[in-house]
Amino acid sequence: MLMKFSLTFLFLACLFNVGICLENDKKTANRKVQGEEMKITQPNKRLTMIGKSREALNWTKAAKPRNDMQCTSIGGICQSNTYICQGRYLKDKCRGEKSRQCCTPAAAWSALCAASHQNRVRACDSYGCGGFNSTSDRRTHKGTDIVCSDYGIINAPFTGNLGGPVGRAVGDSIQYDGVKLYNKVHCVKIFNIRPYVYFGAVVQGEAMGYLLPLQERFSGITSHLELQMCDGSDPSPFI
Image (cartoon, rainbow, N blue to C red; front, side):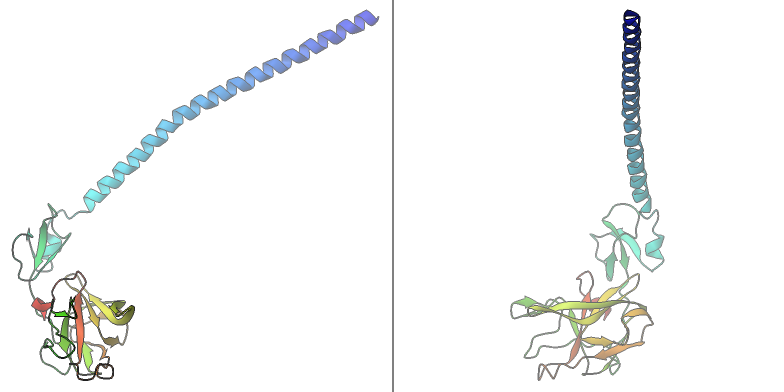
């Protein structure tokens, strides 16, 4: 009886061990299959990313102007920037090479100071000169000063949009006493002005604000506002 019980126990133990071995083999097989699937799907993901990159590249190329309409619609002419332009060159408005740019005409701006019929550039005084690229205290003036009286009304020189307050370096600090005005052709920063609003559309000749007083800080200076083109070019052809 004891012998029969022992044989039965051994038989069941063998069946249990065989079952465990089969289960381990099954798990190992599943892991191998999953590993092969991961190896297969990874290249597909890479190909998908490459496809997206190519699509983005194609979109960037397509974003470039296909014709010269962006230039001609504002009265400009597309030509090589090696030629003289009586107005100024605008980028990314002409098809072809980067050197082919839009030459816009030098259309005159209206008077900025409401008390004057024309824009008059500030001459030299004891504090410096108002012309573009004039030097004072070993510094080059990258703007043009337009004569106007303290608290004088400042009008928009062209139709466009106000782009918020702008600052400039004054000594060791930044002084936010300007506003940006821009349209499809021009972009200028007007300093030493207190605008009525900093954002929104304005029409040529519309009152934008008033001139901040200079005589209180610099006695004897010629009161003026300062113009700086957003790209650092000379605003003289337009004023």
